[in-house]
Image (cartoon, rainbow, N blue to C red; front, side):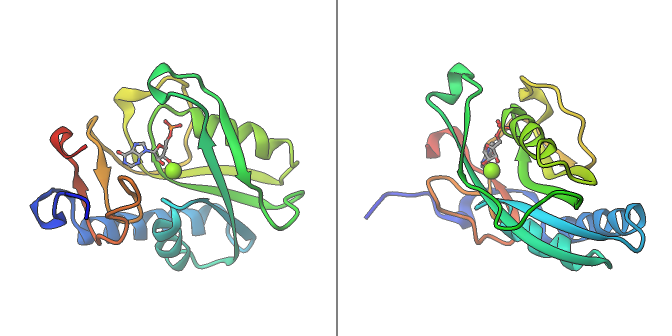
Length: 181
Ligand code: IMP
Ligand code: MG
């Protein structure tokens, strides 16, 4: 048994209602931006899976899903900036309208890497979406297309996001205090 902090003791940052309202707005925005065209949601496993599921259902367009998996090399605290692709997309991306879907934008290293990678696939359009943005932690500046909420520099869990694989199934987003690490 691990000694872990119970989810009910964690402070709520964003409620499921707040998240649902914002995701609906982002969905309407995407529907307007791509009127009548089809899009491919590319989710970054595993954290973005729940956001992708809700966002996709808030978009009224012909859409398909694909998923990728990445990991950061070495010590993130040292900002090595190296990202490794563990799982690539299954379908060809050339000529498609791609929306990369991330749970949280932190240093910006992951999305910067993914942007470069996907532009090389020669898509028709490439857009970047993240539910959360920890603006204070940015190392690599990045122009986002769809952001749900700017949040303070706290470690958050829930709605897909984990700490050591736990808490992903919380329906709201909560703050994991430093003493819980
Ligand atoms: P970055 O923008 O390259 O630093 O990486 C962002 C990734 O780090 C996200 O996709 C998450 O997987 C992870 N991450 C960053 N901050 C948090 C957090 O507060 N909770 C959970 N995962 C986080
Ligand atoms: Mg992630």
